[in-house]
Image 1 (cartoon, one colour):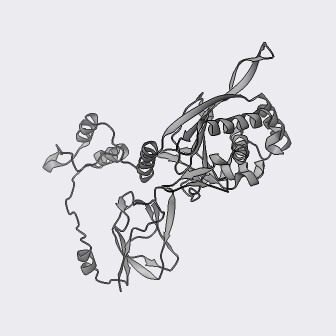
Image 2 (cartoon, helix red, strand yellow):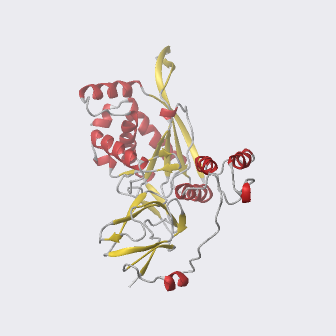
Image 3 (cartoon, helix red, strand yellow):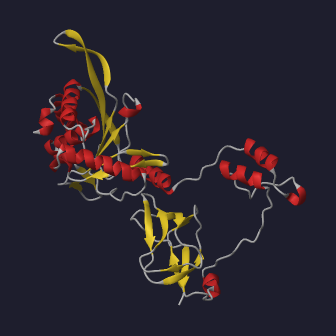
Length: 363
């Protein structure tokens, strides 16, 4: 007997999904465990499996289309089974309007992402031709629909700014000893290169352990002080920002942290990562983009986010003498409901000591 398959809720925050790819077409035989489709949530692209043997009778959401959770995704059943009653029950209506367009005009429209619905053709019998597409495109700004990820990012950032009173602390830290340590480590481990971000993430976890109030979250009735130090790493993707989580950072070696960050960043860029929940602190590093300093919006439910600028070569006063050294500007943005200025300052002071005397990161 035919069964309607609805858009599944594949994450706690998922409100709608986009069908990235159908692995089956109408009429195909399906075995239990076969991949029916790839669906993009607000966090990642996940594979959707068939739960039993059947035939794909109907596709309700085409590739590239977005629909809310519980929308009709597909209908599975026996070969040649009549599904007209199911289509009627689920209010499925087909649009039989035919658009007449030249092959060249269609090619240009696809390349430019132009919808044909609002274009009036000037060719024979209203056929859309090349000049119609070009004329329409010249009078438009490019329209790019919001991705699921961008919608969720927008909602969360607005909520964070509105719900938590942000303030920021700024500190410039000398990085010369950290530079030397990294060079030494990478000479010894030529197959496993350590980045400055790896060292900063490890140092951040140690500083949190020394200042446990930083590792907290706000609820309506209480403040939660987390035992595990799980650090989110802000990663820029083409359609938004994603925050992979490295769990129990304080208990892991520098090499382990480095390998996990590389692997999770790779999976995040491929939209195949699910480790996006449970962070207790976030690090956002724009140093590789040449940014001197910046402030970030707190990644709720974290109480703080650390923003890291680039390593900059500059004159430094050392023992009343001007020398050439390297510094980085750090910004700690805090939720004032939990983190008072003194607490945030103590954390930055501890982080400064670790980065300026970096052997303490390894001990």
